[in-house]
Image 1 (cartoon, rainbow, N blue to C red):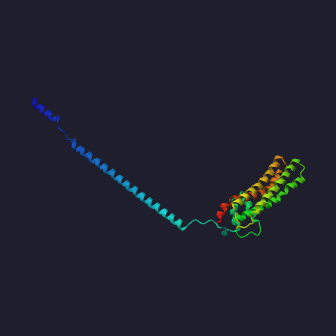
Image 2: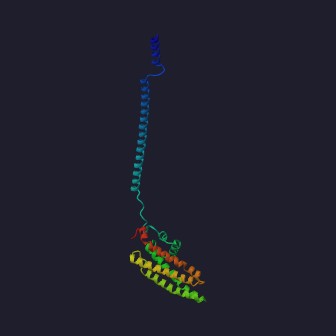
Image 3: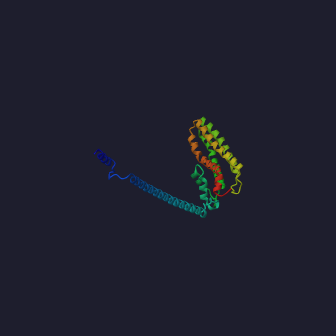
Length: 258
């Protein structure tokens, strides 16, 4: 009996339940699931590469087309050439040249007020006209200190005004030297030596005026503001002439001149 019971017990312990699958079937299912996931990931990667490639091709074609159009436009529509002196009237030329000055309105109005101007003006001729205007304005005020001396009873003011008389005479002389270098012709050679000399003389004339005002201020003269106001237009004209001369090279380029 014991042997029979032992056999029965052995059979019960080693029997396989019906609801537990065999090991080889379980591993087969896991392998199939893994293969499906791998295939899906591969498809996603392939699709992404296809999208990126398509976008790159579209961008490349768009860039190439834009560059081609730009090159075509630059070939068929070159930039306009700089304005030539014979394409601008007197008013336009004057405004273009006076734009480089500190007092453009004064520059334009003083030149435009001149009579018998030619139909076209170049930078060199406009500078010559500006220089002559500066000389004329300086001469107009050069006698002003003498007029004030005759009216003043202040010793300090009279002393400073006498210095102004001498300074103004020197300023007129320097502008006369400048005007003498030009005859108003656009064909006249504008050399570097002339530019340097005229620059020195105009700067010297402006310095003479400032020295006069400094002397009046130092002496605490009561006519300082009056003299300063009287010299303002002369100061603006000389400043404009100096600015035109300093920008002469670039202005000649704008007008297509040398």
